Image (cartoon, rainbow, N blue to C red; front, side, top):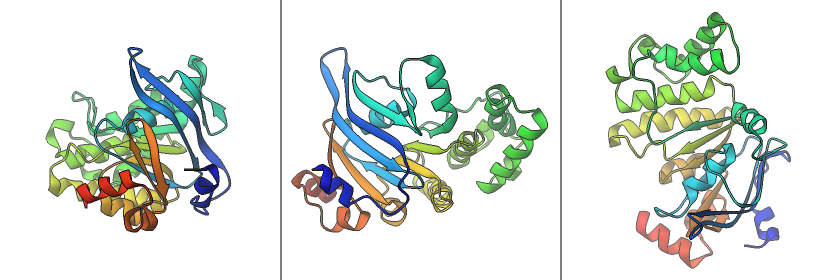
Length: 258
């Protein structure tokens, strides 16, 4: 896709780009080329859904945005800060970028409330009272306020993932990354997590979501991106992506999931 084509599908969200990735390349063990010159920009308030087959590099790509994965070539800029190997630089970016993973990664020995308040107290240096006030507001927002004093093992998978979302939001990030947040859930629990993500998107949060949830992508995304073999194959509005994909690889992928 040419730069002109890329610009043509940019939604009218706002001119401020908060993620700019240019020609990002990554190798594993110097022989597996997992990212092959991937470029993507995301505007403030935009929701971008990244789709693709297993092993396409999509999760690796978004994990470079907060330095959970390194990269060897190219550049990444997050909210005006160029990502580098400088630890201070990485810490600054991680304060602004929340992430929700496939697995919930909650501390099993801590209550829900303590899981959510841990980072604001230790990283943001908030007083405990402020951290708890914000945490309770967020738990109410994701619909599990009544679970605040339970332990993760007492919750369903969907509830645990909503705790994970509240925990990420507690740091008051400017950007949220979701790496297949529903893939580890039983089907009946998927909807409750997607509902929280829809609400978050509708609030104006900048979001990049790796997911195979077609309904979510159709309804919420401003742009949908397909990756395959470490390459960004196609990006378009949801309507164009699902109804009139231009690339043969996209057409084949959609024929397998729709």
